[in-house]
Length: 146
Image 1 (cartoon, rainbow, N blue to C red):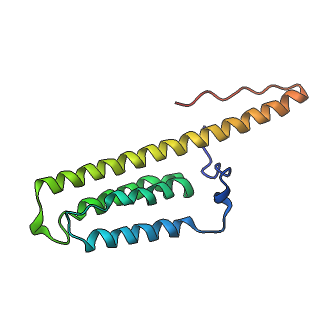
Image 2 (cartoon, rainbow, N blue to C red):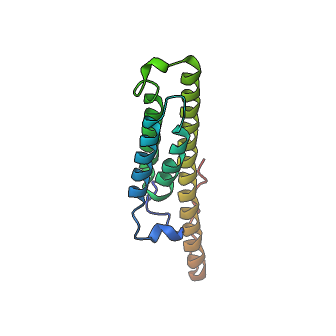
Image 3 (cartoon, helix red, strand yellow):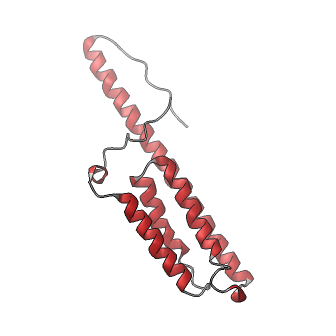
């Protein structure tokens, strides 16, 4: 059973005319500028969590993992781009840890979105069953998703 990506309409901001994609893009750009204009010892990669969560909450479900991948790429790219001479093992380890934290954020937010969509669909099915019960018909409930 497939899920409609536009199922999540319960959030009041999801009907807002504001374009959340531009906010996410602007956040990525601002963090990118911060990341690449400061020394590599400063890790601003953790700030990419906000655009990842924005992508998960207000965009289609298939945009969360590309946003996560981009955040990880930019975080790791900052090891070599602005100043390759200052590279140390501790800095690389810190960037890898930040990248793993971004990956966990992306995966968990994607899973959360998936479960929210499943709950909304099951609630709609239950409401349909309740309406059908009043007419004497009972429809089977969907199987639980894991």
